Amino acid sequence: MFNLWRVIGSVTALFVLAVPQSAQSAQSQAQIKAQAQVAPPQRVMSLNMCTDQLLLDLLPPSQITSVTFLSHSSPNAALAAQAAQVGINYGTAEEVLAQNPDLIISGDASTPTTRAMLARTGYRLYEVASSDNFDEIRQTTRELGIVLGEEKRAQELIVRMDATLNELMHSMPERQIRVVAWDGGGFVPGRGLLFNDILNVAGGINIAAADSNDYLVDFDLEELLRARPDLIAYASATLDAPALTTQLLQHPVVRRLYEDRQITYPDNLYICGSPQSADAAKDLRAAMLEAVAVMGRMR
Amino acid sequence: MRTNIPLNASLLVLLAALFFFSLLAGRVWIPPSDALNGLFASGSDLSEIIIFELRLPRAVLAVLIGASLGTAGAVLQGLTRNPLAEPFLLGVSAGASLGAVIAIYFGLAAVFSAATPLLGIAGAFVATSITFALGWGGGTLALILAGAAVSGLGGALIALSLNLAPNANAAYEIMNWLMGSLADRSWDHVFLVLPFVVIGGAILITTGRALDALSLGEAQAQSLGVDLLHLRLLVLFGTATAVGAATSVTGVIGFIGLVAPHLIRPWTGHQPSRVIIPAALAGAVLLLGADIATRIIRLGPELKLGVFTSLIGTPFFFWHVFKLRKTAP
Image 1: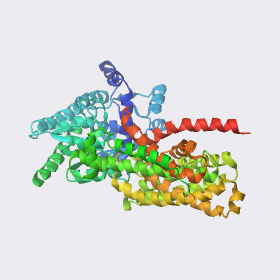
Image 2 (image 1 turned 180 degrees about the vertical axis):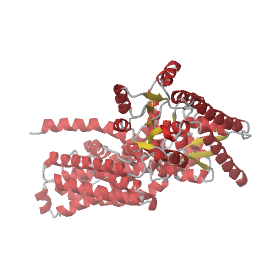
Image 3 (image 1 turned 90 degrees about the horizontal axis):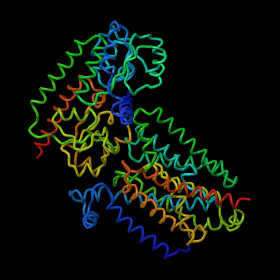
Image 4 (image 1 turned 120 degrees about the vertical axis):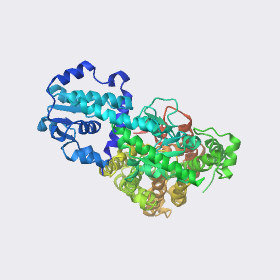
């Protein structure tokens, strides 16, 4: 099975780290409006895994030419089912020529050579910045809605997301659950990643994030032991095929001390921000409460 | 085998001091008195857990693996009568990493844990055999070239197995792993490599006398009753066992085997049997020292041990190349 998206996610995160904050802000309102002046696109192609989800949520399948192979083979069954209704692409310029879309949606960091070529050949290209928190998800969804001529649909998605978020905000656990997302590799998600916002909404606190706004934080096993988190959260992708981290996860100390205090989260839902990220937070809340309840019974 | 007691004793004292110091090095500060307690008590206290289950196995592994690399370097330099011979440069490490990569990424390691060191040893054995077969009798240059060719082949095959690995994270991870590290290793790793390192090291140490004879020349050694084929096989098997198992736990750590024997030769002279034991101790001192340095020098994430030893070792390699150029006819 494919876990490329995880690698792509981390690589994207690295790219984003290297780019100054201003450069990754979305296009100006004027540009977006100008894009929307054209008649609503009928053959839209997405070259980026994160824009796949947004596109499939905003447009009916009949108006989507293709989404990436990553969504077609996504571990997220709902996304894979949606993707199965439309065509497939591998993010190459040749496919763009063959499929001849009237609008191309891509991320602002992935497939740089393809995007450069498209810019030269005059295809209509809309680049979507990655969303690292719920505010950015709202903004991205709204802007993409304008570009696609689906403002109402975008608004519906945002309203639905905010309803879920509100529900979660008003039913916070009595005490914040202290969590470290651990993959055994020495880096954990920091405050800058969407993971942090999802965790906070779900009622947890990322104790590795500390004071830094970085995307990834350097955090080693000694620090993990000292921090004494309530729960360790594993990204599910790291567990389903043999890899080094799965060996390191099994460090005897972690196995002994945290055997009953682990949860896994489907990290594919945490890499790309979309209105569905609120549902990810809801699932995380349920998983954490269950794990904490088990802990409570043991004490 | 004559031993240099003052030299060995001073290396042991240095090693003991570094060993204790290594228990203090880490992200979480633990006072020296607690560190001493942690040595003898495997309790549930934070400092006891960190000392006994994280830093102690790490220090033990550094000593075991540093000693293996030092021994292998000294013996390979004696056997080939070539001052640049060492496991990393002869392709042993590349073969071992290839074996370990296959074991890890195709799930063999998950089936039984000894698969990683065993495949590491097999890879090291094959790689070393090829290097010896190609490079024998051609002098320094042929041997180093053969080692480079085997390392290149190993690297290409590692890239291929990553290309085909079922987990796409693998590409990123193995890059990391190949840089060599002792971070977060446990007692499980110590017990996994201990038998191989002991057996391999013991085999290598027994070759001292024959290597002494060989230093007079191949014909002279044969006239003294040394079976050259037998000797080569012993060195091959000993190196592959010790270095193959070590590499499968740490990733690639280069240059310790090159530097350790050279560092102690001013005190031991060039007779191989007098070099082996001090070179083992010097290798342990170097690797433990380097591992402490990776934990103390903070440039962001922890420095990788193999990167550090290469950075320290490469200038030494350059220096040797210049020396060879001067003395070459």
